[in-house]
Image 1 (tube, rainbow, N blue to C red):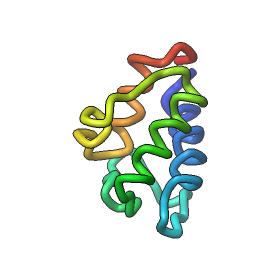
Image 2 (image 1 turned 120 degrees about the horizontal axis):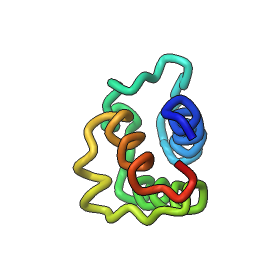
Image 3 (image 1 turned 45 degrees about the vertical axis):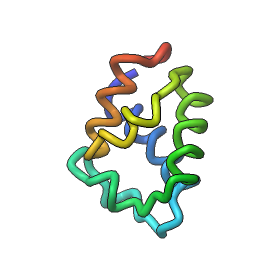
Image 4 (image 1 turned 45 degrees about the horizontal axis):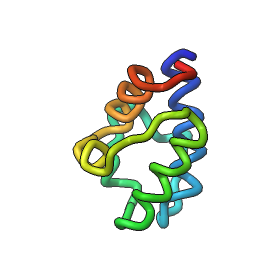
Length: 83
């Protein structure tokens, strides 16, 4: 799976988990994770959704350390069973 495909699938998960209205068409790999308006429950929801989607468990501390969407894509590319 290439970066664009991973980014698209991450986008679907983020749209479901975020409490903010997100126009995913404006999101790039440089978009900050903070801009998605996640609270602690939304982060846990996102981690669960990504585990279901990509077959990878992301430790909470690792998720919180990710600053951009690109960081998340890179992590999934390196750790996913599907990438």
